[in-house]
Image (cartoon, rainbow, N blue to C red):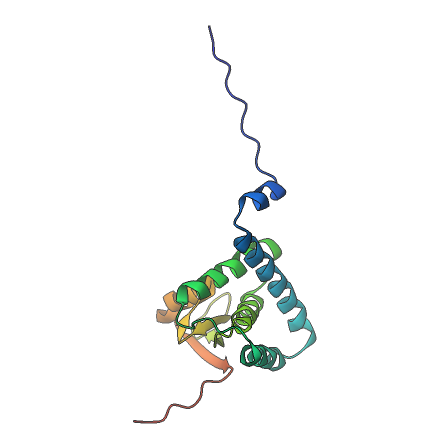
Length: 166
């Protein structure tokens, strides 16, 4: 007597996945996707200085003040933007602007860093977001790992206040 093999499991559809996922995670994924699409459209329409200024105004006006030291929350936002980017596309600058906007919405002070490699590279320019001086997300981790190969920071937006000598 032979036992019939079970039919292969069908992959879950998107609605099934959404129903099985925590609603907070679904909301964060949608927010990240919209932020990324908005960042891509904004970068085509207005200057980067204006976008960053709008993010800073949003942060200052935010009624919500998450703890900026909550690095795990900021990393969670960075992962959500990275996941959205894997599905929707987007260069490091668009991902960084989207992450900056998500952090600003939560009242978290963040800095957009734009740099270029000092050595020959197929991708000379790069952008990432820092919170309290620490780079976030995959773009930030790649930057931190690539410090030995050399990035020259071109600008930080919003600019850091000047450090006074002690």
